[in-house]
Image (cartoon, rainbow, N blue to C red; front, side):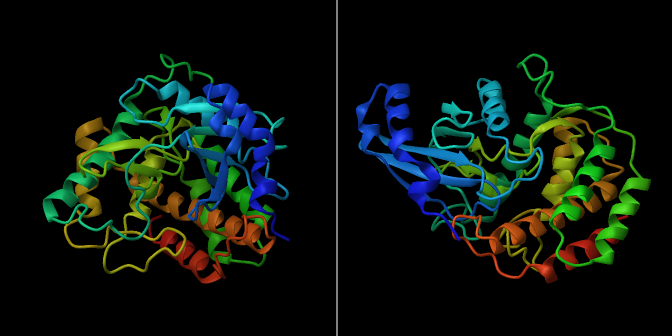
Amino acid sequence: MSRSVDDLVRLDRLGPALAHATGDDAWLQATAELISGGKSNLTFTLTSAAGEFILRRPPTGDLLPSAHDMGREARVQSALAGTDVPVARIVLHDEGELIGIGCYVMEKVPGHVIRGVLPAGFAATHPEREQMAFAFVDTLAALHAVDHEAVGLGDYGRPAGFMERQVRRWAGQWEATRTHDVPEIDELGRRLAKQVPDQLRSTIVHGDFRLDNVVHDAADPSRINAVLDWELSTLGDPLTDLGLLMLFWRSSTEPELSLIPGITHLPGFPDRDALLERYAASSGADLSDMGYYQAFAHFKFAVIAQGVAARSAAGDMGGQDFGNLDDQILGLAQAGLHHI
């Protein structure tokens, strides 16, 4: 049975904590609304006479090991403040005393979070769409250029052996959430485990870098105001981020990912090759092994989709229902096999 917003947010406790953190008693009279689009952690808009904040908390129900760590999300965004990577300011972080589980509250950054439809009049021309795309990939390159030691994130992950652990982790997540056999997923996991390339760089990795996880400046398509959703961030191989970006960057000839409605199939958006060239020019990275990272992206996202389906069926997604994802999971596995 799904739980109410009041049960999930506990404004009777959170409101006073926000009033204390901000020095504004208007937060004693706050309201909360679930934001549609969140497939893993739950995201709410908190509103009071003082303005709006964003709350992030895990879903309800049994949680997989190492998943939904709100402390890590809050830490990485705090560490990146002042770098070339735009992030939201953290207002409050709590380990579980306020609402019964770890959560954090951040500022609401102005701009567009784009899920499937371009706002009216925004990036209406082909040059603006190219600028929007290049700003997006440049932001990823900027993240990968951050000196993680210098910003206090030297212990944020274990870069050595990163890809081997990633393949094992997502294979384990598949076993924990699978509802039926998908031989293509098993075969893709086996190939990925056998063909891990040498890791050429170690950087901060976002883990879910896509267009609807950034805030686009409403007045300037070439500007990104914040990068959101740091749940899967760590230290590791930056090409995993680029591989996932390639998966989400759909062309007009490919089926849409129902969990991630996109806009990149629209006229004027550059293709994947153009984005890879832009990233390589910005970062100096060797992209000769991109086929492997694209295969891994398909594997990872298929497992994520299975997890979403399982949590949705159990009523642990704040009442959101994402339907039957079996065909999409199979399609992702089949497409992944073509890359490796």
